[in-house]
Image 1 (cartoon, rainbow, N blue to C red):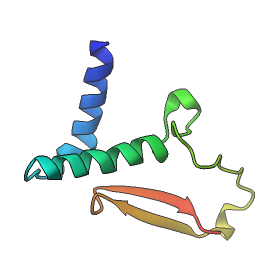
Image 2: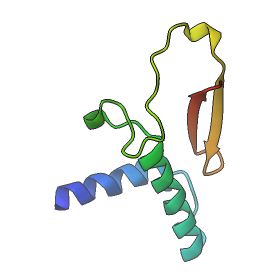
Image 3: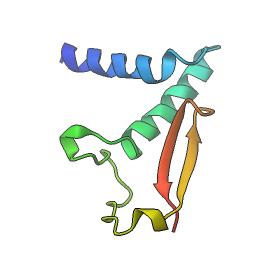
Image 4: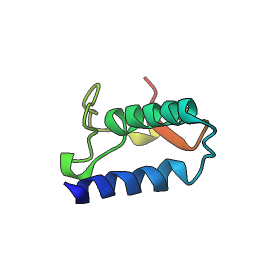
Amino acid sequence: MNAHCERVIGTLRREVLDHLLIWNESHARQVLDAYARHYNGHRPHQARGQLPPLPREHPSPMTAPIAHRILRTRVLRGVINEYRYAA
């Protein structure tokens, strides 16, 4: 179990905490909540075939990638970006 905890803490540190200055406990909770939503709802995971743990919808196969617009959503003021195709 210790290896799993170390892996999560290392990922959190590399992807978020090394890029932000945490002011207090409430700010730390807000940052961790935002990252947890991103990690579980958008970030791809190798063990799940590049799907997030809690996908809202399964991505449809692309037929013509040039015809689609890509939308960016900034998470944690741009520290993390989420990309998706526009309808």
